[in-house]
Image 1 (cartoon, rainbow, N blue to C red):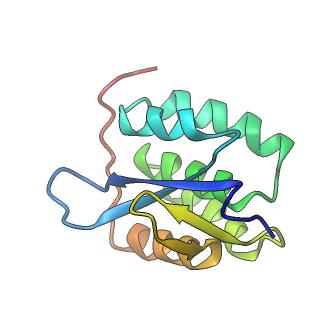
Image 2 (cartoon, rainbow, N blue to C red):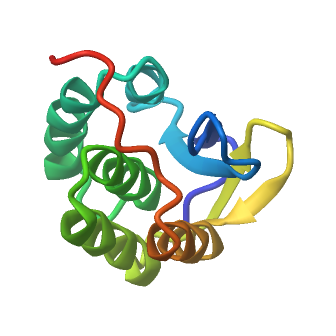
Length: 130
């Protein structure tokens, strides 16, 4: 299990018009900058950095969910779903503290991300080519 002291989640707007927010978890030690890259529209840079981090920690649900969101933003729903499913079944599940201060189980966050993907709520905007 990962603890709330080693996990952090930021929230990004799913799109400019969407009232709901997309979860973007990030471990404090490894992926906070990638959450920033996602927020800034640097989707491909985030994907490249997250893929390297997932190689080192293949069962980290926070990294997997971040990578899934990055793929969703890039328009690759199949890869996004695969990352969310990996996070859902990860033996390293645990509580993630999100930006509003609440704590959410990583599996619940992965399920929420999959529902959002099903509703096409992730932005596919690419404001900057990396």
